[in-house]
Image (cartoon, rainbow, N blue to C red):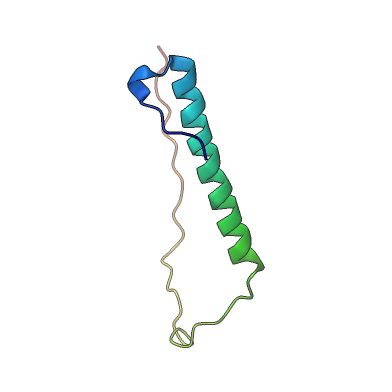
Length: 69
């Protein structure tokens, strides 16, 4: 682990590097969690056996021409 530094005494470059390090650590944790979930065997829920999802009529996409300018 790195030593904790007061952000008030850090340069802008050091602060950006620290933020990048924190984000990278979070991304690594996320990817590991996703891989762990993907590698585990899926289990079926026992309480959702006869439940179906009811969908309404398909929605149509409409486009309105706007005047240019």
